Image (cartoon, rainbow, N blue to C red; front, side, top):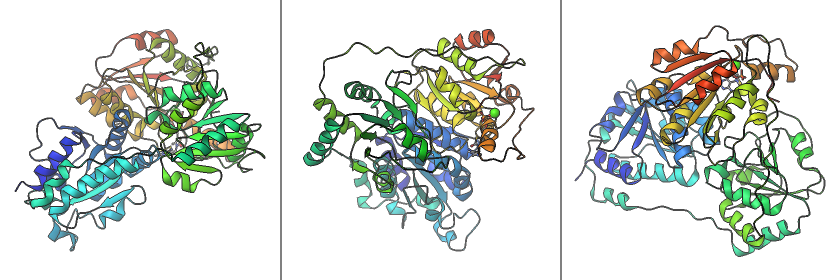
Length: 526
Ligand code: TZD
Ligand code: CA
């Protein structure tokens, strides 16, 4: 009989989980022994960075990814980053090593006490197999659950299990194929079509799932047929629609009252691939204007169940878009006139305005550049200047947990070696995932990190004003030189001090990672 380890490795190979992001400890080494050719272990130096890199990689490839963490301490270090993976519905399979079975009860050092409870409520499914022979099946379940639920899963495996012999049935799992279909029923489809056809002024709200499911271009076709305005759902982690398209109205403000106001005059709001809604700032009011109906289509059953208003249909938004496109068949129209960006603002005091930095990115980098953005006070500037027209152009920490941006950019760049990838990272955010620079250097990942250094937690200054507490401590972070940190991790770096220099540097083709530090003026997110 083959060992548990052999069957597990083969299962991972067959399912395409051969790039493993991890940071191992003694409990994990027996799993990593004898890894067959074709596996790639991407070592991260801190578990937050490990998880962020895996998140970026899994989002950009659209496939489940294995994350290998050390017992409870490594898992705990990854937990903040896991909040983003949950909100972006990233199918991560987090596996941690457990002490040998006989040592768990007496809590020998490195025991992951009550391992299945540790990562709840973040993961969609967690287990520690009841015996060694169940490990291959449990690993398969972790992979399938992550894919079907689109939510991270957690598997804790006692390390003496890997060398154990499998029983007769253990290899059955190798041939499994698990799929999901979610086409609306005939009656459900009819009702939806009726609602949309009957609407006089329909509006579309699109979520990050539209981009992760590869529906970016389909959403454009649908919007152009319906002819109504399009918003991105609030707190977006992906861009679901070209941001300078004439029908695009921007990202909805993340408050109850302003969303209600935005929908004024629309009799139908069709929400595709988003929760309703991920509000942030507490701005109370009515959920919807009088006379506005909301219909949500999402594959995420719990997002449908928890919405506070409206109708919901749990179905694949792609199938629903197809249905509607057939119904609203229309002759091809000329390509829309994309809205031009305004002149960038400028700043005093030898600093660049973020507008100038983003205008330089827009002008100097190819149209298919993918951006991973974690710079919180510059949101307004970003959408004012950027012109993103391609699927997979934009990634943002889905739950607002900092530490995704830099590692996420490394993961996206590893997933798309032929696509330019840029991390746009604030000087505050960079510190939460900084060790990913080492992994980028080690794998020579072609990535540009544009480091916006305003010396402060800009967004928190703005929030302080909003909450009526402008005088809080702990907001300034002067004196960090990221060019020296980057060099220390083996990443080439530059400080640029004016727009011309920035544009010249951006136009160069990097063959490995590089960091470009720019001193920027303080702006507000909106
Ligand atoms: N810790 C974590 C893990 N996530 C967070 N979101 C915060 C703390 C709180 N926080 C924000 O929500 S924004 C922000 C912090 C610390 C400032 C980020 O600073 P930055 O960007 O330099 O990256 P800006 O443009 O200066 O705001
Ligand atoms: Ca900052």
